[in-house]
Length: 308
Image (cartoon, helix red, strand yellow):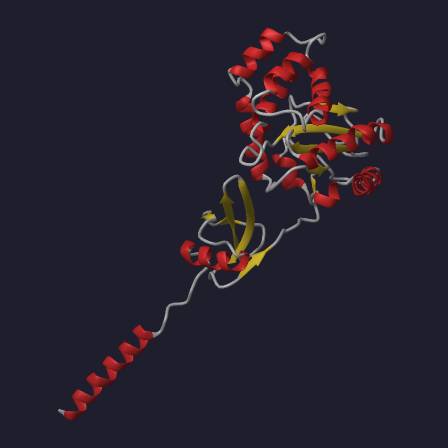
């Protein structure tokens, strides 16, 4: 009798000990992963965090999980690699040496029917995300217009894409819509508008933008009635929204941002001296590259000698 009671007591004690052992945390659990990345990146409760579903990755033994954080118009994306048992997290890019290291970015950059200047089929393609009300974009724009084609008359093609930061720039969206309206009527006139709007930046307000634009187009090959209708009805806003979505998918967090053959450049990296170094490198690289720029989804395919 005593032996039976002892065995029962020991069995119960063992079960209690098992229940008391905390379950292992797993990064494959979305709540666990969210708490972990909030701590890593110092994302407080004001930051919205969205954890994507695990999907197969090119890294053996790991699943790929996208983490999207946002606060207002600011956003950030992190690609994390979670081990199959959920115990290890790797952060960073995984490269395949048989492909262009910037192929994921090139696949997301779409330049069909976008304002452009430079040589079609150039070995270097630059995609610029910009905001017409952004003072740093104004400096970038002036540097590019003054130097890019003068230095590289045949080697570079530049595409412009809109990224108005409406939460801090009250007339940026309307300026972007207007630029697209002008581009639809007369693609060449877009670059006149580009130069003018940045030069007039300090004088433009949300209230006077329309009147100043209509004054600007006088004497140019632009129908003012058609332009005013396009501006008032915001006919081109879907194009702007699409450009914004593309920027977010690429992890673009601010303006100006450049992609040079898919390579992301922001801040100091987008200054002319630094940009010129990257362009020179890419021109030289393209002379021997076997996998640079193909399948980019762009209007212009990068020239790759020997590639069939």
